[in-house]
Length: 274
Image (cartoon, rainbow, N blue to C red):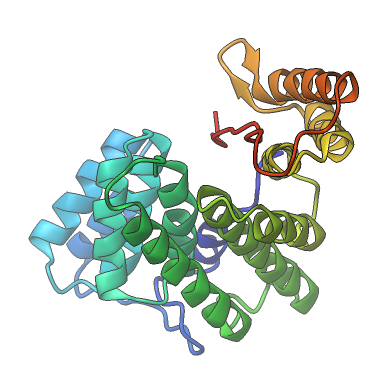
């Protein structure tokens, strides 16, 4: 089930690019500047949005819409599954506004997903992702409503959803570090805070349980993920595949004496969004 993107909520609520305690409506200095920004916002596809954002920033270097334009460019690269350029655009956004929660969450979640076991800079990458997640955790409680038409209950729900995504990112980071107890706790917290169950988080929780050899819990998490649509890549459902692997591992473990701790590596997996 698709998450409510916190960045989109704020962008829709008066197109605000600031994420501090006192959001302010950015102002265009001319109609042409406003039209250039609206071209970014109304772009029909990621490539058009990226081009429109760069056109805006080239023509109006001091635009008050810089934060929001770069944020939308970051999300456009995410849609294209272009991690390298998403990271560049995201870091450009954070140079303008270090408290841009949408970008902080996006980078915190994406970096561990793209970090491999034997990357020489693995620790550096994961530390950076953790810094972004921790920053988002600090900022979210203090964000004011961008639009008075949003009710207090709705705004509380949006912030809980954003915090859920932070904990999902922290779970990914812990999983990449093979700190499975911490990953389990983070994914469970993400599910508790989410307004609705999320198939991807349940899949990642299942991977974590499997890594801890908690096969019954893993199978249950994969079943819940599959009931919500699973994690599809082409014609494959990764949740179904990992459930089958967990069932096989459980049966194999039941058919032979338990090995001493540490002698049998737990099954691994890389959580990946379709």
